Length: 199
Image 1: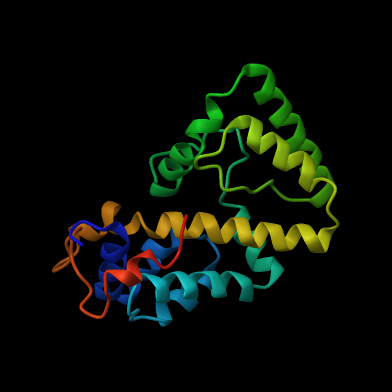
Image 2: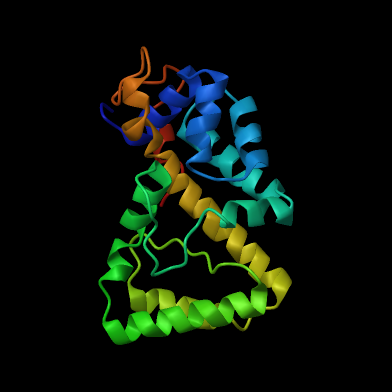
């Protein structure tokens, strides 16, 4: 399946040096423990294996490691500054929500502030493909959670964001790696394997 970003991501990640793999993975998740686990888990046989490992590594993180990852995420509605991949990805992921009505965006900001007061960390949600109204509804719903329940939701949202970003690593960095092309094929991966995890 030429040009498939998931296959290209696996090919690139397997081909990179340990240092470059850690650098590229850190753009997907700022938890150093997660990055180390994913880098040491190479090579990956295909997208299903890579995605499963990424999700499992998120579940295995201590809460302090999750908080380290959250520190790299801007508030929903705030534009990430800078030209780093993380900032560019964050702006793209929040583009749909940013187009909401001003009154809704004000309510999102208020919900963010209330959430941070209740839970002590930024409100994390996979913003890609979600409107401001959907994000606001989710924030209000999650304010009713106890801490343990919300921590599980945060891990699930973080895993979704990580998978989206893993698909992009070959497009943004892999094409410049020796021997790795955006349309490259991992010989151990079948076309069926590429569809293993949905967005």
